[in-house]
Length: 98
Image 1 (cartoon, one colour):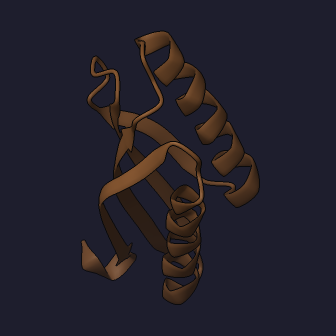
Image 2 (cartoon, one colour; image 1 turned 45 degrees about the horizontal axis):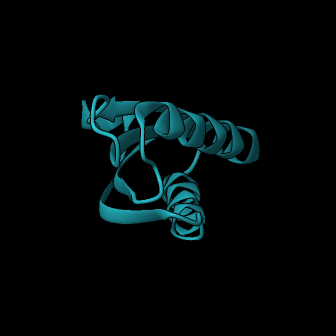
């Protein structure tokens, strides 16, 4: 069993209020969850209007599959209008890595 974890620091330039930001993030997280069957949450910058950090996790039977899905999620985020990825990290761990 492999656990993949990614962290994406985003700039949401079109958001002018926290209400706008929350609507964008709700849509984004729902879309990513439905498309990739991943767990996703905002983990940092909750009170900033144009910044968000989201954490994504998945479980897979194969190391390469976990990394592949997280890279696909990163590419999907790159295509979101009004969102810019400022930083990203992807890690995959196995049971033996404890």
